[in-house]
Structure formats: C-alpha cells, structure tokens
Amino acid sequence: MGKNIAVILAAGTGSRMKAGVAKQFLELAGKPLIYYALKAVEDSKIIEECILVTGEDDMQKMQQEIVGKYGFHKVTAIIPGGSERCFSVANAMRWIAAIKQGAPEAKDVVFIHDGARPFLTEEILERTLQAAKEYGACVAAMPSKDTVKLMDEDGFAKETPDRKIVWTVQTPQVFDRKLIVEAYQSFERDLPERGIVTDDASVVELYTDVKVKLVEGAYSNIKVTTPEDMMIAEAFLMKK
Image (cartoon, rainbow, N blue to C red; front, side):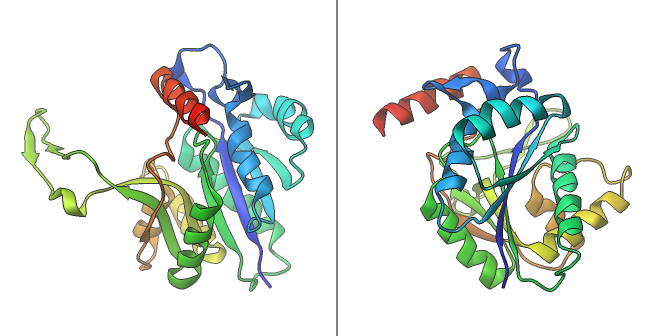
C-alpha cells in the first residue's frame, strides 16, 4: 500500500512583497498565509503525510508559530529549502528517498504545492490524484484568459500561440513518487550546467519520457506574490 504525501513549499523570501518579513508569515484575514495550504492538507481525506519546506532560519518559528500552534499533525518533517524553488523540491525528494528506503516499491503519490497558494481544495486534490495514478504525472492548470505572446531577444513580439492550447500552470503538481524522486536525482546530477527550472513538471519533461497531464485546477487557486495578490486573496476569503 502506498501513501499520499504532500510537500508544501514555504522557503521563499517574498522579496516582491517588500514587507520585511518572509511571505509565508504575512497575515491574511488574521492568519499567516502558510496556514491556509497546511489547513487544506490537514483536513484532506486524501493526504496522509506532509513535509514542510521552509527557510533554514525559519524552521523553529514554523514549528512553534504554525505547526504547533494550529495543530497540523500531518506535518511529519520540517526541512530546509534552497535558494530557488527547484532546490527546495530537490531537498524534499532526497528526504522522501531516504525515508522510503525500506519500502522502495510502495506506490506512493507526491503532491508538490506552493505554500503561497491558499485556496487549495479537496476537489483539486481528488482530480490530480486520479490523474497521477492513471498517467504518473500531472499538474493543476487552467486555460489562459489572456492572449500570450512570445518575445524575441530584442523585446519584440515574435509569435502568438493559439490561446485555445495555452494553459497557465498552478500547483499541486502530482507524481508517482519513484518517478519524481528519480527525475530530481537526474536534475541534481546535471547541475550546474542545467540551471534552474521553475516547476516540477519541467524536471519530469527533461529527464523522463513520461507525459505530464494537465488537470483542471481553479481560477481562484492563485499564488500570492505581490501586495495586490494579498488584496485579491482577502476578497476571496470574504466571499467564502
């Protein structure tokens, strides 16, 4: 029997917030931003275990002021992140590989989710779990509402993809555990030549022949990155 394991990423500095405090600790409707993603995982009937990735200097604060204070019992480990998102995920994949050494054939599923996306729902978790079991790799995503243009090296538009085939990618990004662990092992072996990647699906696309399925997320499943995003998130919470 396998487990469904969530990896929640909260190691960013939140520089675009210009708040002087790590983004995950900013208050959103009276609670820290990171609370909402962890609460969704804690309440989920699907997720059995959670690994929380945060800044090395914030690990004690995360344990005391978030995990302990709000009783997030599914969080079994708080581990340090890296300088970029992909390095934080790589750390988590190494952690998972280590704890799964005694059960390498277990059919675990790993959900990788941005802690700055506070509106994760059980419906999204269910849809992505089903797709991950069927295809091995999937990401929550939504059709783009905007026309997208590709830019040349001089800053001019050079191509306009058909909007019908353009989707914006969200999290969770969900994978067969063995697949994503091995993909990140290949990614780390390829450094520094490879450079950073911005999502986990890219690592699977680069280092495996498994195709990543796009699964409907939600337009409300926003990532809070700027002060304007905080205002939008507060409006969503008021509506709920």
